[in-house]
Length: 387
Image (cartoon, rainbow, N blue to C red):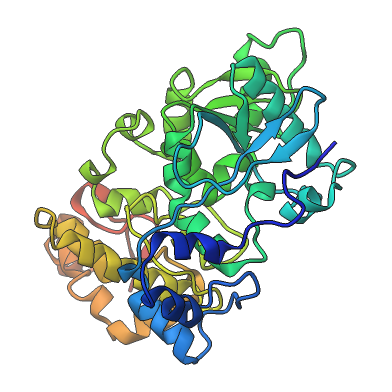
């Protein structure tokens, strides 16, 4: 059964008032519109939204978090909103389905018949086996109808996963027989093909925790991030040191950006927003701005943060100059803007090619096929006919 500790949740504004001081609190609270009914479209050209986008970083982070707990009767309840003294907790990593249990379901005591309830129950059961009373699931622990709460949750998500005592990755599309679970060949192919490895948000859920334990649809343990790190490294290209919670600042911007290349998100802006923790930046969410603008703001914030860090290397500087994953829809305009610059001097290598020189000086040769040598930075994906 699902339930809630309080029938009426504590407003998010209460935490702002508790942490800020004097008359500035009332003014800032109204101006930033931290109510539960605030609009999720922060692009609106209103004084409130412009102020919020410009001065967001000048206000303290609240990091309010609520957890789930199961009482002795098996009822799953939400805790009150927590800021300090957060107890040890387990955290779930998964991909969203069509029938997830939402925050409103918990508040109304419903959702038990939804397919997503099985994941919540699994997380609670596994946490209990690991000696943990509290656990966290993003579908129902965040009130996504509140733009203010969603804002703070996304900016603190990496931290929540890193601080979790346990992280369980539930792979709903990986099925394992009870017998033969220890034989990786039985499930490794479906593990490699799991949708979990293609989603943008699961990137930080893989990297942030000290350990990630993988479970099949049948709730059988497949292994953890360390025991499966070679498979994960080969699949994702993420360095071993990053998988082992090494300092992400030790990896170049270019390298970290490559980790998101083959991952997708439902909302295009989330491709950039899901990288906040990877680059240790905090920004307001502007859903509706589009992927390009989201990456542009991310680039500007990375540059801003890097001013207090060691000088960026040349590769990072080039990467930051155009910090977004290439989208074929935008390539045409980008190439047209370059006005041929992309091909400048690209042909010169052929002039020193021995076969070309022999063909050029010969009297009988009519057709020459040329294939570049990738070892010498020459094109190799096409054949060219020269008459």
